[in-house]
Length: 100
Image 1: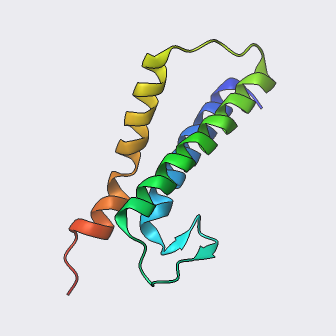
Image 2: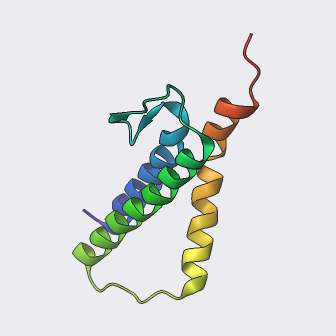
């Protein structure tokens, strides 16, 4: 897989993973939540865990292509903010959209 394709794969995977906690009531889309609807804090913890999963996949793809470049804290701050921006459509659909 070339650099461009793996970059787009990580971006699309990040977009899907960031919205996953908001579009279903199962934990990681597998385990059912006992009380019916998941609380917001569980969704945030799931979002943080998925951030690290997508980051690990991106790191693995980078290692497969060639040398893994060292990153400073600025990289992780920017990617965490980008992951939160990716989660915005799911947040709007879950909490801000009015249900009729």
